[in-house]
Length: 252
Image 1 (tube, rainbow, N blue to C red):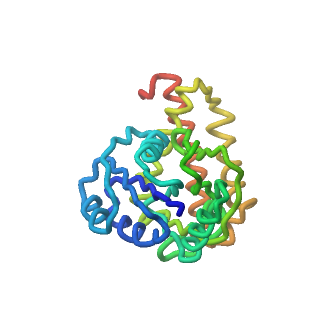
Image 2 (cartoon, rainbow, N blue to C red):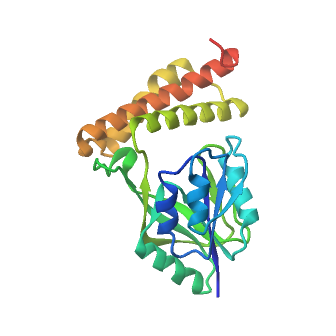
């Protein structure tokens, strides 16, 4: 019988880790790759039967996931983030898929969710993520937003993967700062140039228009406008950081 290992990256995720692990009913093995948590993440994960392996992230999510692959003992890999939940329907589909004997890499339908605000358009619109694949040949590339790679044909499962994106605005802005810095540093290392007029003045306006108008963020009311506005600011901030990395190594 085919087996599947679920891989979760974690650092101080005590608010999420238990619900995440409990939702993964299709896995034969659950690995938590822990980046030095100082809260109850490790305790909670181990109490639910997960295997916790300490390994430093070093701001490189792809290498952390590749390390997880190297530690897995199953025929299949399921990548799950600690703020995601596997629905009952998706659990059933995953088991049926891996037991079918057909080797494919599967896209999962992910629905982004707030705890108290309904938002299903713009930056919160449903998306698809490639997360289930045979262990053979599986790898991950990229720095901030990873690309999951498998040599096998691809298909899509219909069950929902729920993504609880942010708990509060403090968490939102912590990630905002972390991701904009990581993106700017990646661009800088790649030698990407930054035009003050094009990238800092014009590009953010397009980012807002795309999220709020083209992707219908306006249908989500106040939260839709706020998220579209912060997408504008995300774009500004990312390129401002790149501009000054190129100009003065980030110094003001």
